[in-house]
Image 1 (tube, rainbow, N blue to C red):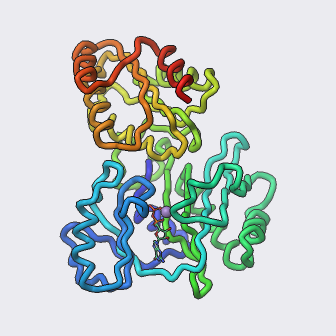
Image 2 (tube, rainbow, N blue to C red):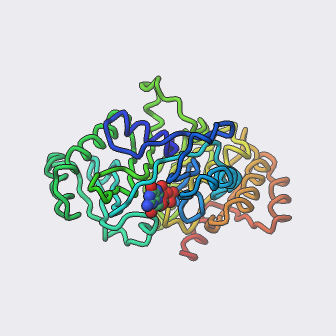
Length: 353
Ligand code: GDP
Ligand code: MN
């Protein structure tokens, strides 16, 4: 499950990691307590908020109320926030990128760093990032390498990396991304933004997990953040076969998803929104063999997704089973075509890539 920024930052704070002081703002919060200069941040489960207008720096007290109102009514990639985070403005000297993730290839946790963090980080090619698997090196060795690369002393970075590593493992995270990692003009090291994904399979040992992220996210497994093909299927077997077919065709599957028997428009739409986590996606393959799942419900979700998520890549859709005819009627009136087999979907996705 993916946490909202303020939820991830609560975990960081408990772990002793420096974050800007802030308060959570709901619709009914008394905003007279918010004193500029302040940064108002939309709490939606997606990145790119800065570019979409979801991060607003407010310097004048008169601008707080209208900015709060504006943010609550600004959808970002289809998400409307239920909360905002109001943080004390930080005087930024440098913005770096730092993340920890489960590295399946190396069977360890790997840290990725880039000197130039901030909202343009997706412009950097994958091989521009410093990648440090925590396998043979100790965390202190890795922290020293990061300090050397960034051109800072290790005094502040080493304890920061140690705490982030502890926060990652103690919370069964699969991803912890800090962007920007900030050096302030007073030379303090602080986490400006945090994106955190927790392993849904670890829910049983965390009775303390009460996050806002909806339980319908549970079957969504990220396979490769830089994957090019998203997958949506129903039934674990068909979902695995779909992932395998994508990989066998020489493309990189980004995720595994079994939408399950009870899938409805909202749960399927949530899956489309999660695809947004992948910066390099150029296709989504949808493979549904409907029994309890209904093809018309999937079709409605596809139409809603096309309507609400402008950044969606092309969809390659194969549907079969319950309410197939209704689904085709719905899709064709929305000018969305389907294909008759998984092979055709894979072939078409491959041709287009
Ligand atoms: P994202 O766009 O969803 O990743 O949201 P971020 O929380 O990373 O904010 C986007 C950008 O807003 C950051 O990279 C900063 O450049 C800027 N920003 C956010 N908070 C502050 C702040 O306190 N001070 C300054 N100067 N800039 C900020
Ligand atoms: Mn960010």
